[in-house]
Length: 297
Image 1 (cartoon, rainbow, N blue to C red):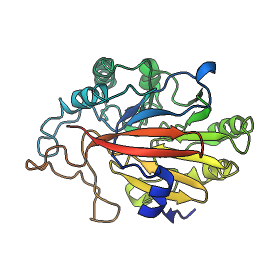
Image 2 (image 1 turned 45 degrees about the vertical axis):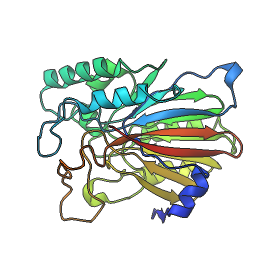
Image 3 (image 1 turned 135 degrees about the horizontal axis):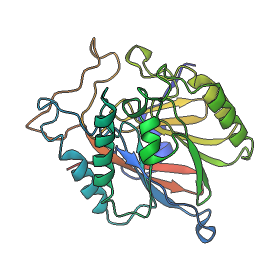
Image 4 (image 1 turned 30 degrees about the vertical axis):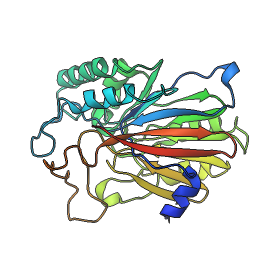
């Protein structure tokens, strides 16, 4: 499935007239309450913190950036309804003990977030080497749904399978879940990899993502938020808007802008450039999501 270009004008139509502020990282959510159903709210998305990464030329503050992001979220003028981390919580390692040590440290650091609930999903760095085993031990299921103030949220796992597939069983799970939602239902999907073929040469795709998009296309109000590519990007596939988030550890170049997908070197003159997190205003009428991208520092 070829994505349609999502230009600035389209983005502003979706986001409303407010300013755009970039935010990346993990995301968390609060459970829905009957008294607060169908009202406006906002959440924070964080992505690609890669805890355990080392490389002074890429990020000399590798041990401090996540803590700065937590402090930035805690300093927001009003508390978000929830925070969501969209994968690559930790940096990959072949050592199962080291993987669990990194997950323990990550969990301890984000435990300082001053929100009622934080939700997590894995990235391939967290889950592809053990099919999500360690992730489930620390953070729970790699796929799930929840409802909050009139919005149905779906968390899809397109990383535990090392071939970058969602898989038949999970697609059937998605189909069954969507069958319970009306065509007009407000649906938000969180994934790590993009569901569409953004740039498969750099692993910026999901092998069977087109099948998930086909299922989602039957609904009128679907928006997808994802990570993985460590930069802001906006695309439309039919009536579905896809928004990627900046990463917290390092930025990546635009697709096909250079021969290899290598992290962008640290700029001492502009520290934390390209890093950030995102807040999303969920507005009930008309259904829209005003995205603000915020810097780490």
